[in-house]
Length: 193
Image (tube, rainbow, N blue to C red; front, top):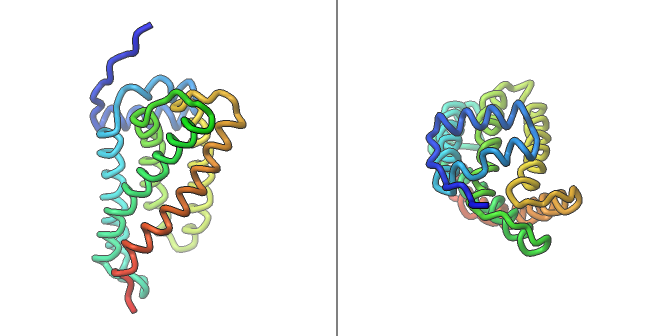
């Protein structure tokens, strides 16, 4: 059996694929799309989420004393793609090393981008509502975990539920360690003191 050639998905293709993944969640649905794009398409899509988040955060920064407009804009433009790359890199390395997953990094990045982008944009849009902000954060986090679990099974070809879950948990731990360090380096210069 030959591997299908990688299609160069456009943003509208990715949006349609995201809707399919969100409305029909399963490893099989992710399998339909994992080879339709690669790392470049995933990062382009994630940059779209970063721009939307940066603009919204900058617009609402004046309502928060502890942040600045420029700081919110720049940090979101940088942090969202960096955090995405760190997490998907951890999924790939852990799934491949510990559980002998057979997926590729482009498949992991593309698969994760399909749910990450719409959920993060939705979280940013709904998160600006003062009363709902914390609740939206919890719901979006739970959805990210759910879809991440399905995406790990598909993109790394880990059909065993335990290996998929452990890969996701260890990736989250690594993400928090590396991401916390990188976030501190990037955000500290922009905090009002």
